Every structure is written in structure tokens, then in C-alpha cells.
Length: 275
Image 1: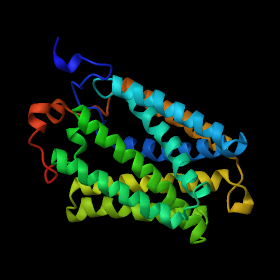
Image 2: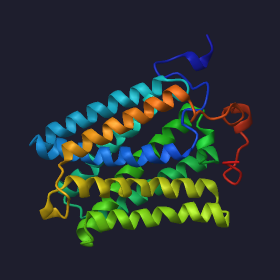
Image 3: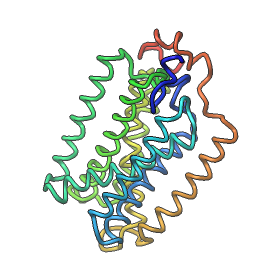
């Protein structure tokens, strides 16, 4: 039996992440919003952060196993893990502030350092950070480690601007919307490296979605619109499920074979990714 078929987590036979299309960014922002609202609902409305943490960890483990058991990109599995990380990453970042007592500025710096370290280890090992190179299990591990760190970093960053800098959730959301335009314009008009542009935008989607989720879910006393975390979580989850269902049917976000072929991708560098 070929080695790539052995073990509980088999080696991939094709790319494990989607092609980057407009709908990717829509779903990404929605998962960040839904993850923020769901985590806050579990922690605050259920009344026990310990129980909430166990539930979030359980969701994360189930989604993680599902994604790593697949051998190629499957929209439902991929976005289930992204959503689970959005929920669990929010809980982890919040716990570091609430229980350990690290200020939001401290958690923002801490997770930025963690994120930079993972990027460095990934590039040192694989010589690329391209999403078109995620066709081995080791690269997938690096990819999801970065995703987790971006969610935790984004949570801390969004809370820092909204609470510590007293901008409020709506102003923070607008701020991060403007910031996310920077890599888009820089890539489109000024030739910014596409890997740098992608990860820049990816990090910013977290505080962008979370800030608007907090705005709609938090009470008026906390500068929110007071619709409630449960309502925000439910609506975003339904929308994400519909959009992921659309991707599963149309398969419009499957990377092209020439991009996902291991023999060709082995030579892909960060300077040419995205072509």
C-alpha cells in the first residue's frame, strides 16, 4: 500500500485549500463574525466560561479531524475548521485577557510574535508561504497554525482598538475595512507580492468581522446595536452554510490541476505565486 494512504490522517493527493475568489473573502469575514458572536454567546449567555471552553475545544477537535482526514480540498470540511478556529481562537484570546490578566495591547503583541514565528518556521522549512503549495500534510499543519494565530491576533487587535483605544466596535469595523483595502490596492495597482497581500488581508479579516459582530451583538451600553450574540451567530452561520453549500455544488473554488500538481508546485516561489 502506498505510504500516502497509511495512518489515520492520510497524506493529501491534491491541494487542501481553496482557490482565492471573491466568495472566499465573503465567507472568511462571515466566519470571523460568526466565530466571535458564537464564542461570546457560549461564554456569556451560558454563564460558564469553563463549559464554554470545553464546547469550543470539542468543536475545534471534531473539525480538525474532519479536515485532516480529507485528502483534497472539501469545502464543507475546510470551512468547518475555519469556523471552529474562529470560535475557539476567540475563546483562547479572551481567556488570556480575562483570566491571565494580559492587557489587550499585550495579547496583540504576543500573538503578533507567535504569528511571525510560525511564518518564519514555515518559510524556513518549505521555502514558500503560498496557498498554492498546500498539498502535503506538513504544509497543511503550518497553514492551519497560521490561521489559528491570525484569529487570535485579530481578536486581540479588535478588542484593543474598540476597548483600549475607545473607538467602539462600529468605528473599529470601519477602520479595519479601510485597512483591508491597503493590500488589495497595493497588489492591484502597485504589484505587491501576492503572498504578502494575501496574508496581510487574511489577518485583517479577523478584526474586521469580529468588530462588526460585536457591534451588532453587544448592548447599547457597550457601543453595540443590541441584537444579541445568539442572533448574530445564528444569522451568520446560516449564511455561511448556504454559501459553502453553493461552493460544494458548483466547485468553483477548486484550484486548477496545474496549480495543485505536487511536481509542479515543488518549484513555486513566493515571487510568482498567484499567476
